[in-house]
Length: 260
Image 1: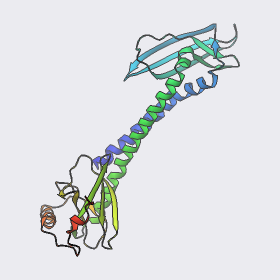
Image 2: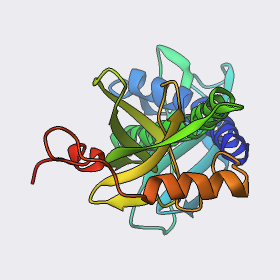
Image 3: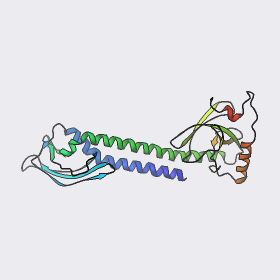
Image 4: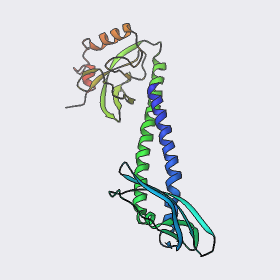
């Protein structure tokens, strides 16, 4: 349950940050791209208030501008938010610009000077958030996978089986094993920082229903399936006893190992 809770919290956090970043940064970026070739300095324009702060290697600028394209004409105002990468964390000056044909789209020279920088910065942030979202979703769904496995195995006679740990991927174990029909089956199991119960080589211990089904890998403490102490002793005894030879002269765990 804790794994799923962390996953859910991660998913909600990533979605919230995506929504806030999109609402704050994308509108100004989109309009700046639209007027980047036509914006000119406005004589009747001023920065009402503005501040740029360094944040984690980025510069976060928030500014409010007011301007009139025509003297004595309508006054426009905009609140702008920029985020860009800059090694210079000193002061940043800004001059008000606008497109005379679309006066409502006001901006600053600082915004246009850092336009592509802002776009690239936002893209990198989006990729990082997507990676976090995918990772959190894996935790959320992974917790569900363990819950499903527990329900499938509840009340059934379990037998230990050797499975091959063919790799790990972002805290998950990738396993392969042969079912009763000799077909190779695979599975990806979230494992966090747990250690498998090694049987030798790349072979680890798993359990499955006596009548066949999904093989569920076990951690070194045999704690994932809430086994009783007696069940733990039985599984360990079965797993560690000498294995019978197969017709080709190999033991079952050896048959699952990749060729040297």
